[in-house]
Length: 329
Image (cartoon, rainbow, N blue to C red; front, top):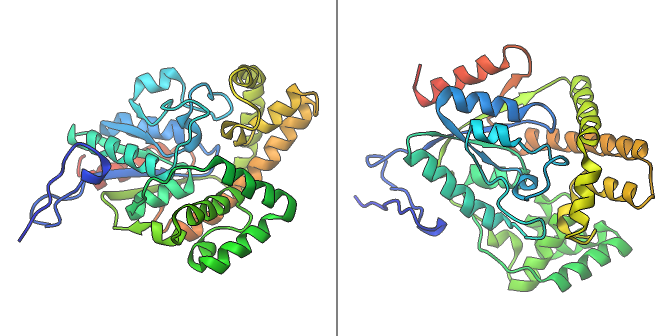
């Protein structure tokens, strides 16, 4: 019988005992659901009910100064419950999957060691899946010139051309990456050209390091669309254009931070290329398309979800499920 002991420094040294006789995996809650369904409010109530802390798996929330357009939890909400991986980077910083996993692992381990319940709120699909499956991802430096060349190729010849090339050199990676997802396709090719190895070979699933309960918050599509429409209107009323105007004073309009839905449209309003009303319509439309993509991801890539209908009893049912999972009454 042999053991690997947990060490608090660095992701590679966050190793848990392989013997079931030594120590069980830390228990963690993973809360999923489409954009606008109400995950933030539910996560706060869950955390307060079970002595938890929240870990964001939404890449948009990493960046400081991007509050309104991302529907980031407010300062008041973050005082109610400690949040991790929120406001941890400047908008021009790149947060890779590897960097996310290192930071998320450190946060989850720290929360669990203090006797609290980690509540991961998602989020970015690939980040969530990596946590669920225990991916090991090496950090690979970006090559901006190569990336720009690949993006230009996608712009002039179409994303299908890039995806076909990826399929030719790494069929496994191509099968798992939607051909319409230019960013992920470009990143896979960038990694292949930088390392000389298949993108699929870079990822090693070692098995989840945590015992998860996966809760999914859901709403009938018409009600969800109504909430999305109301949220977009509220973002503009809260000062989305002023937020973007301030960001543009520090960062160029082609910065990565402006790729999230809402920011390109706000930039076009500020440039006089569309009206505020047109921007709202476009943001609502694109968010609905995004929600449909999320639904497909939940069906195919996130099995084992306990779905909870968003209604007046959702909070109670979610809290009861988590209490039972962690063994408290």
